[in-house]
Length: 249
Image 1: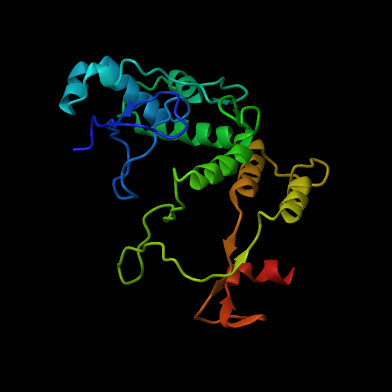
Image 2: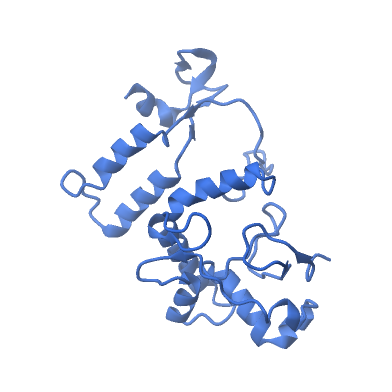
């Protein structure tokens, strides 16, 4: 029922866009409706191209030409070595032609998302010129303040408990380690990204270190049951075992 409906998307260059089918989307996460970014998301680019090039495929979902033909890829991020439309670049490089190229699509997605976040630079909007890793937080805060978005949390993938129940995110009290705090994060980055003091042994490993430092802001470090050391300032909580060494340090 949602397919083909017109809507206004926040920060989009087009005044009106349409809800389109995406065969690779996970229906087990969130609402199953996501923002389409064909410039930098390979799955979205392949979906838009398929709807334009294959009328029979589009008709199967009641998608008419006016819902896809007027819409071109809009560059918003520039990535060195990938241009200003990384999804298009990777799909052409890997010769991806349909949704059936699942392994290639996964490879293209992993690479474009990693490069886009770590070295991508915004080319559109009020934050043009800023790194994606910096602009992402700013845009999020602006959309929340404008009533265009709200915070939403979910597991990275399906989580099943030992009792075979599917787990969801619960809104509860929790103590966090603020890994994203400026002075702490800057000190770690300075050490890790200095070739004279730190050797990751491979460029891809170093990229993953940098990526983790950019997204890891808060780490839940306590629990309310099990063995372990009580949190000194709040005895109701036990320090989560993987966080022990960080707190002691």
